[in-house]
Image (cartoon, rainbow, N blue to C red):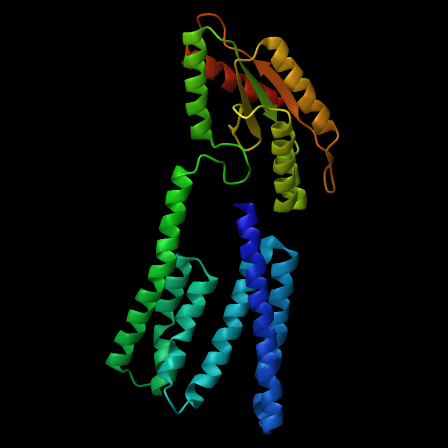
Amino acid sequence: MPERRNRFLHLFAAWYASGTLLLLGIALWLYLMGEYARIPLPATLSLLMLVATLLSVTREDHSRLAAYLVLICGYLLIAVELPRQSGLPSLWVGLPPILTLLLLPLGPAMLLNVALTPIWLALLSNGQLDRDMLLGYLTLVVLAALVPWEQVRQHALLRATDPLDPECAAVGRETLRERLANETERAALLGQPLAVILIHLPQLEMADEQFGSRARQALLDSLCQAVASQCRDYDTLGREGPADFWLILPDTTESGALLVRQRIEQVLEQANLMETGQLEARLRLCQPRLGESRQRFEQRLQVASQSLADG
């Protein structure tokens, strides 16, 4: 999911850069055509588009601000050019709702499109309300919203069925609990050992507050890579909380689990990140006791995770 979001951010940055070049091209064309009075608007908007491009490239948390700057540029350009169109001006009125739906989430985009309906229709019909134009505009808004609405529905379905955590390569909390319950019952039924290594990242919250989401993502990725390098294919790393992880080791004795813990600690000690320095992690080993129920073992793991987070 983070890689996919980065790809989208880079794609939007490329679109913003293309819009900057387009506005500069419009300004140059107006200069060549001798329309000097119309040059300041596209020239000024190209500077805003350049700022939006730089914001989207340099800071991920400024992507929404960049989208609003691009939206303002589009609105101003359409508002100025719309009354000047003599042939098929209704084609221009379809640009604002589509541009809004491309740049903003579905809810704010629909609210903004409906709120600006009188303005665009007034610019198009010189202040006179045209019923057919109104119905056409609202129909376009509703139909254009079907695509992002379906995307939102598909993403929600994917999040509900995806076993992985949305931020890292560990499984989510529900999947973790399900696999822990299965492994606990299987170990009790077959008389096999079971071990769970609790991991807490004390730097995670600090990294997010001081250095941003990229430092947070780097911590999560480093932890998952370190654990994956020392685990078997059927071991399960799951995210219990924002900074708490459980590593389920089926058919693993206490000595084997201690060896895995030692190897993970060694790998984590060698991980140095640019913002936070050496990666810090607290680890603790837990095993089910003889005759202990699954519910009681999960409660004990929760208590141990909390104590590990408290230091």
